[in-house]
Length: 368
Image (cartoon, rainbow, N blue to C red; front, side, top):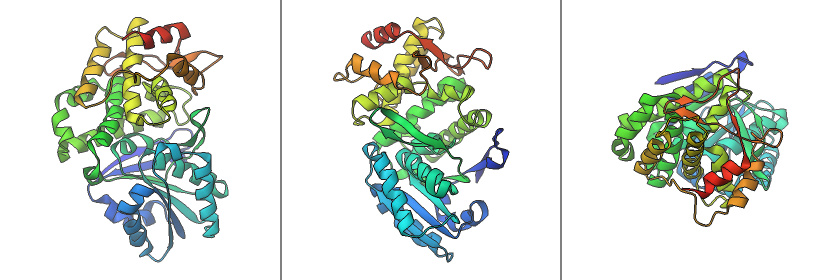
């Protein structure tokens, strides 16, 4: 088993471990008493993962003698809403789960976010265990304590920081992922390499075939290195007041593409497109080294990810969506940008995002 510690600075008692090991999901009955003992557990999952793993996990955990409630909601980003949050909370209340319960968020990024938000708000907060089942969830959404739901005004605009007691990542679960879902997760891996580790980026460039063939050593390296990178960043900046903003590379344009497509485009696919456009902007602004965008675009294409915005997307709509981004300050759109492969632009003194004129963004979206 690989154990990666997230040593939080602001709330030291909220520090937690990320456990990575094949077959780990079958050891939940041993892991939970150690990391998150509770009188009852609410296993929150979606309609897809609930059928695959939820029922067996609930039965497995309940074997320890505690109450376990499996609560599912319809799968898909379109169901990451206030209504879903309310329905899940109401079902926990109907099951008479008290403050001595804990939430197990079992699923992909949507489940991690919604389940985490339920845990953050149920009876003013109960413990949370993240059990990610997709690559994107293992290396991104399950780590860092960000929880929330989407609203008509934009993605993740309502939520709370609520750190998990433990993250349980079992790479064997990735065997059931479709190539589309695997690629979506790899977009976040490319982001990690682009902003923090040139050697890791080169690994993705060179070993893409092994990764796509789901060779265990290659996939496990992706999970481990990406988790190490994200854990190191969020440990320094628990509530995104500084350097943690670099993790938003590709996300300002990406979130706009997601929202304007009504979430028909997967998060990872949208982030892939966003990274290409944002790295082009970085070169235009003289921030990134020449060729940065081309390398990012090339590796994304090798990983079967889109690199151009959809033909149906409207630039005015994309700009309007970006104005609702959480990084907007004093009416200015801020972007997290790379300065070269393996290095994010910025510093603690000058900040980690760059204000970019709307006209420059518009021009970058129009030109390919």
